[in-house]
Amino acid sequence: GEDVEQSLFLSVREGDSSVINCTYTDSSSTYLYWYKQEPGAGLQLLTYIFSNMDMKQDQRLTVLLNKKDKHLSLRIADTQTGDSAIYFCAETTDSWGKFQFGAGTQVVVTP
Amino acid sequence: EAGVAQSPRYKIIEKRQSVAFWCNPISGHATLYWYQQILGQGPKLLIQFQNNGVVDDSQLPKDRFSAERLKGVDSTLKIQPAKLEDSAVYLCASSLESGTGGSPLHFGNGTRLTVT
Image (cartoon, rainbow over the protein chains, first blue to last red):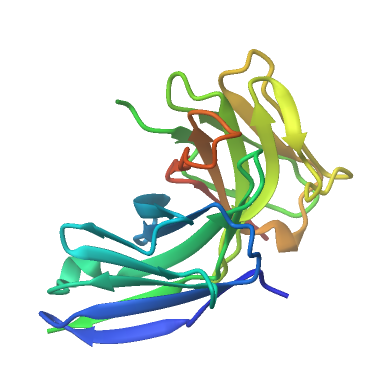
């Protein structure tokens, strides 16, 4: 089965906050990442968090990590139409930089 | 800095034909990855290079897929012969180094392959 799981779809109104959730199975994960993919483009790194942290904030983005429950979330404050995209959660565990991606959450921002 | 460059952007071929994709990573990035992304799914690793050596090719269908990174810089991925199920976006990514975990992947825009 999937090592990284995400909900498939999220609809949010412009100006509201979005919360995208991710769960992973490997307790030895070292870094966890959030990527954004817009249509026809590659994946763009948004932010990442080391496993010994529980929160990281970067402008409108807040990452929360619950290592005990193996749960990662990305909160986008004041969501804009330009935030409509697919968001991927990813984790690495081994020292060779092998990344495991979730299937992605499609976020649709409505006016 | 210039990003990861990939070409072509799109390719349409018939099944049983061959195709090649090219990738130039960010300058100085030692690690290069090829991923396959099927519509509606996350990227799946095909092969990972560290400089010009292969770190992981366990998910590469070696009967039809091959990849090389001869001088430790740019890389090519080839499919021969193509099957319908190879229709996907092929993403190249690079990172500064592996072994630290904190070197995030930087992706190119991908090559969208359609096999008819």
